[in-house]
Image (cartoon, rainbow, N blue to C red; front, side, top):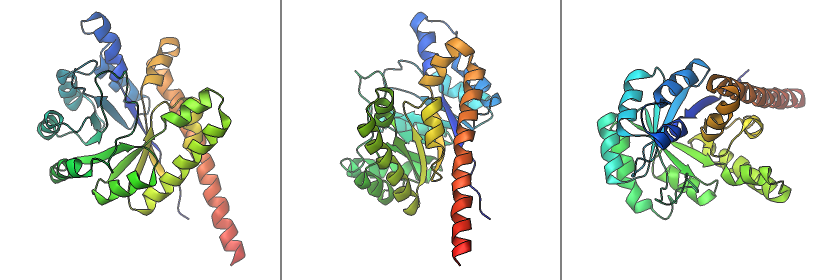
Length: 266
């Protein structure tokens, strides 16, 4: 009997660097945070090198590449500068995201349908270099279809609107956003894409989305760093890992029930 795959946790250490940079110096160290996250059950580390270097810096990327034992996901804008850094650094993966100078964090998904011509050669050169490409997009059918057409092997579904609606108690909007994510994950898997999700997730929303069997990785950062103020970074990652496992158990139970129904019907 097939089982639901292990749900990977990617921990984003950007905002450890944000705290460091607020005062200068070397503390707290995002590389140490990455090592603690891995020890607590993270399957990979994400770092976003922005044009203005507002949190992660070039030396952080170099140290992460040399000092962590799990894959590095290099989150970045699809600029010539960042493509060149990725080709030189050769991380396990890159996640292409939109980027604006004025935003505090990545606010929306990448418009791959509208930017198809510009993105195609950049995705191709990363693929040729053996770097796994992920596109951070909204759960929109046209965006998902374009991602598949561009031969990006992975998409990361933007969960921010759903998480915000949940936090604000806007049930109708939360329900609509959830259906978009659920249907988008199914569509993407049917097109042969590996499906990740992230943005705004906390323990509760991560547990819920973990029950979608099509999703194989969650990428979470800001919430874990915020929780670390109260419980410590290791404990925040451990609690997230436990929430994801609870949600994944629901997915496995649902698959077993579905298989049982089919076997009984036959």
